[in-house]
Image (cartoon, rainbow, N blue to C red; front, side):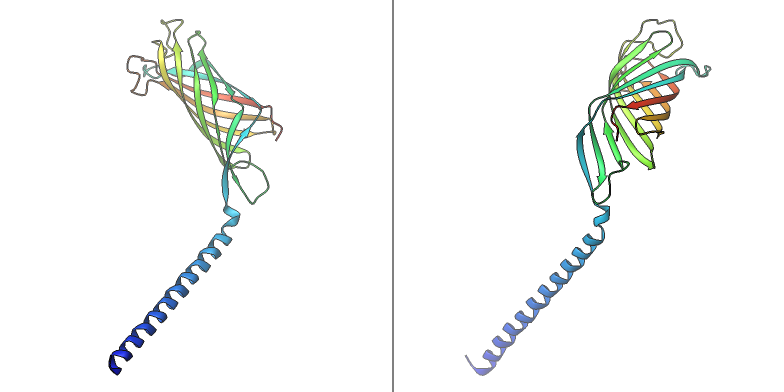
Length: 214
């Protein structure tokens, strides 16, 4: 190997060392930047936790209309009852003191009936989102079995069978145990239970009692 070839090999080796050092330095710099960003976002770190909780009860009284009858307005009355199962999934901030939960997920038993005795019974899943201190906006979807005790009514219950039970809820905790709410409830087949033609809207006011003291 002549002198020129030796020089070329040495130059090639030196260039490789410089390039690898530069890349390592870049990666190290990126890692430092990433660590810095993670550090600055620690206050926003959140976690889902599943808790065993005491039972919560809710009662909603409202006015109904038969969605299938366009000429009918709202009239009294319907009642809706929720019995919450004793577990709750919560989204919390890890690095802040415990307070209002950012999001809560519950599963309630649903009982719903009109003044005529026609009723629905089933299970739901409720998603609660914190809007402001003690103020939650919730959406609940459930599947209920509808039982028609009286068919010759205008409450929207026409057939026995499964239906969807939708509910929008805006609730405010006046104490740690008691909350008041405004509710919009809708029962329909959702296009899936085609042989069940029930169709009802409800505007209601509710009150809930939480046996937990937090």
